[in-house]
Image (cartoon, rainbow, N blue to C red; front, side, top):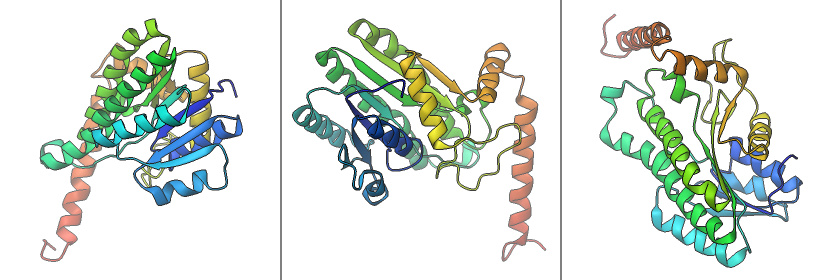
Amino acid sequence: MPYRPRTALITGGGSGIGAALAGQLVKAGTSVVVADLNVDRAKPVTHGVGRAEMVALDVSAPAQVEALFKKLKSDYESLDLVVNCAGISSYGETSEIPRAEWDRVIDVNLRGTIDVSLAAFASMREGGGGSIVNVASVSAFLNPPLFGPYITSKAAVIGFSRALAVEAEAHGVLVSVVCPGNVRTPMLGAWKQSFLTPSISPEDAATRILKGVAKRRTMIVFPFYAKVFWYLDRLSPGLLDPARRAILRRARARKSAESRKAPGGET
């Protein structure tokens, strides 16, 4: 373990990258608070583990975030690491997604990340330092169609994290933003990946994140193909537009074919 904080809070820690991080940190001797909206899902992560505590948390509810940090201040001497893994996605053409769905994704992915990060920064500034890690996505560089709310929220997480990083460094607080490629988490589900963008395990992702924090990196991008897309997007943002248009055409054709097969559709 290249990085061994004394205490850590992981939101969305009941599964995926969050659960993998919790497991690795507990093995290294860190006291970990696993926060998740789905308490039943989080139970296996903390069951029988002396250094792990489970708490119910909806990151999109500011009152719950405030209450949690009051509890952490009371229960722990310091808070050394906070990782924002909580996130949700949405699928559909950007112009057709209802306002309520936009709000749902942005409230969890962006506003939840902001609220937890600012509460963590206040705690760490008072305690003399620490590390905040916000999980974004390579999708912020790839910009694939049909994931408008998700991409919007993750791109904003990158901007927020980079802005906070500059302000926080003077107080001994490292703010890192993670942009992973495909990771085999419940969010990825049965989604078929291209051979150009293979998925990695949550455990692999967790190890890379902790190594990045140990090296005090503010941008942690992995695996290799994610870095390639990151550089290509910076070099020429429209370079991948032909591929994006092809994805959209296939999706629209598939949707049209399914509607014709549906009861009452064309035959």
